[in-house]
Length: 458
Image (cartoon, rainbow, N blue to C red):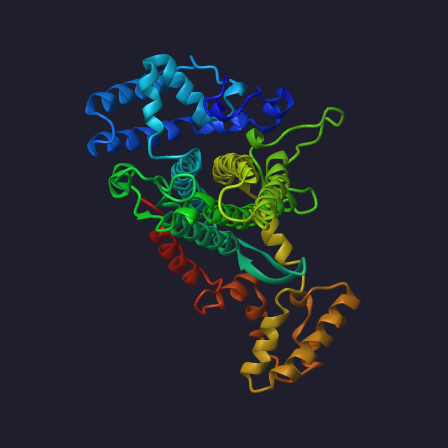
């Protein structure tokens, strides 16, 4: 038999089965982690006297050589060897001979692949944390220069109240901060070592799992061997966090698309992040935020896919679990690309402050403030609310905005109005009056910026 596990079999694997069940096409991404785990495992085997020091050294040297060949593009992985583990073991056998077979002493592919994925996801999560931080830094940079920039704030996609553009951007900063914290917190659950669990029940060899954990910098060791080889919670958690993160990226992307439209013209994206039309020469399409928005669905799909795979599996390992990798790889790649594009796109966008300012002078988003104005003069807020609603309706009928009305017209609705109502109605005063903690006044935004900067990684 050509298979390393073929001793019990009398027939070669059907070629269709071989092609269908092989995972080397995608799990070759785990080559570095597979060798890293193997090197720690064989060092432990040598230290424990399970194999000789000379054998351990020979295997270590062989693994190092194979890694160099892989990194230099000199290795071709083969489908007939099924997966990354068997491909590397075959390469090792070709490199150093039969002693390579001792590498698999005291372990199974089940705990081996789980270890590979823990190592991979730990490294990728730490990288993604840095990328989220870069996006946050870009938001802070834009916010710093737009503290006094006023734009309409929306609810129900209807103009609601004037807000600072910095305040609006910082709302996304805090969304990403929660994403970053979720990723940071997840690392402690990724950082559990499965190696040494064997196929499902442990091993008869006197291995030292604590030593392997030390060599691979794992904080915890799975205390239950069956859980160790069947646990994919750490991937599910990552995909869940990634889905929330992509939701935030998608929401921000939607706003960038809207704001850059001809109807809004609140921002302009840099040409390097846009494309044109093959037929309409005037077009400048916000393809990057559109695609960020679109790719959110594939991350959701990766999460639902793995949940569906795992939902009916008995303990311990099942071949279905081979389906855990492609979604994880896809989500990592999608997030990596999205975050790497989002940060510079935010940094280079042009803010059309005049267009934003003009927008808040051509709506009724200052209406709440004159309701507060009357309430501060002793009128119950509910009565004030009704009066201002009537004033807004009156202004709409006249084709005017609130600042266009005269004091006499205001007094027709209530005698409490004085000349100072026009100061209250100015957009910058509407924005500046919201001094409650977390509000949109410039002084509150400056405090918020200080807090935001303290959250950025060094």
